[in-house]
Length: 532
Figure 1 (spheres, rainbow, N blue to C red):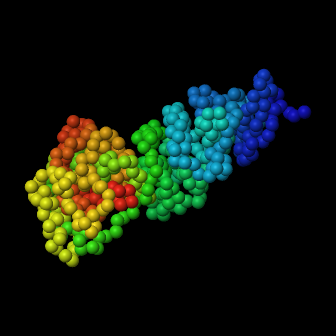
Figure 2 (cartoon, rainbow, N blue to C red; figure 1 turned 120 degrees about the vertical axis):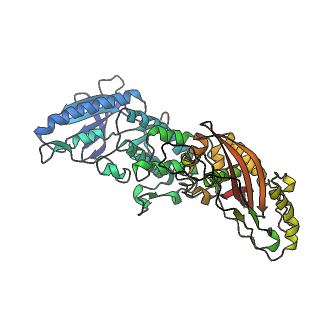
Figure 3 (tube, rainbow, N blue to C red; figure 1 turned 90 degrees about the vertical axis):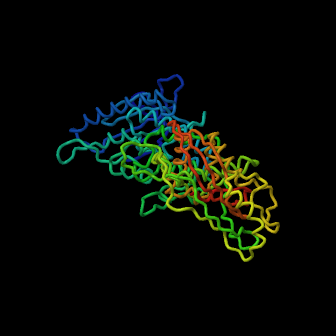
């Protein structure tokens, strides 16, 4: 006959064995259903009567915390009982029938982005509650997350505080201290490895877990940038959207100050624009035009309207400034989105790296100062002039008269290079983009920027997060006063837009921005390559 633990629990099998003790699957013989449960046998790493009472007190305290957590959410196992036996400590917890995320990836391969997003959203709500109780899990990893069979919900198991309690020893000064670091190499950040975990340490571990789910790569299989300490993983996740990449990149930032401050913040950004994740297509830079008849000949010097320059950060208060570079960056993104809205649904643009785009927008001043020199826009040189002279004159007249051209007034391309598709005009694309922004469809806007524009850290230090922080958090809506085509070829276009930003603060800020567009033939649309 099998021995019963605590005269009640019959062990069925050993689930795990390690330095802290063993974990068993057992039956509760004092319940009518003989319900199954998990029993964790824990033993102090130091057999010292001096600290046994301290370990005992801490064990009782941590058991009470587990009882509280399990009673508050169904995604943390319930604590059924705890007891001591022969100098060892036991926890009796709910048995979660399901598979760990490690097992799921090993059996089925990497998970889809939608599946990973669903797991993250569900877990972040749990982690937010745990952190609000001033508790850090300290060992979030695929092995400690179980997808429950009955409802497919992820359940967070194996909190690290109990194990830290078992690691209590007496140091050389005679004081009790923890002799171990709780966590798993590769899944814990540097501050946790140094024994100083913080709340964002759990978010780091969750981000690394997400990378494993999306790529099937363990942390040890990923490279690290030696100059920054950041993990290099994008090349293993080419089909992952820029929003997901941005969220994970911020969660796993090497320095805690660059991560999400709270689980709630990470959850909010992850859910922003829910349902907008679309299949991505890689952007291909259009080839340079070498045909003499494919370009416009003239060089047009334009003196833009007053723009704005960054203010010093040590001014006494934080105002919303709008440097022409910032406005240009953001509006550039705007232009492209508009084009996408006027056509049937298009594949969404993908960048292999996401962590950059427009500048930090809460450091832009309100008082305009003119640019020091005019912008000179020079098209590509060509061998022949006469055919192009006939085509450029209407464009020049439009720019010089500052009139908004109609679609029929846009630059006409020679028949030898005229695309065989019905293109939207660059001017109309600007209009449509801002309509999209005013509808708060920021994901679509972001995906209309070229990869080089998205990946420009000077413009968007945090990539898509900076983009939505500006458009979603600071700008209420945009009014376009005038749009003018400056020049165009079969593959490029330059558009000037005079606009007004209506800020959430109540301020109205005018601006004049030049957009440099590229024709994305594969997806039949214009994208923004730069702004000034």
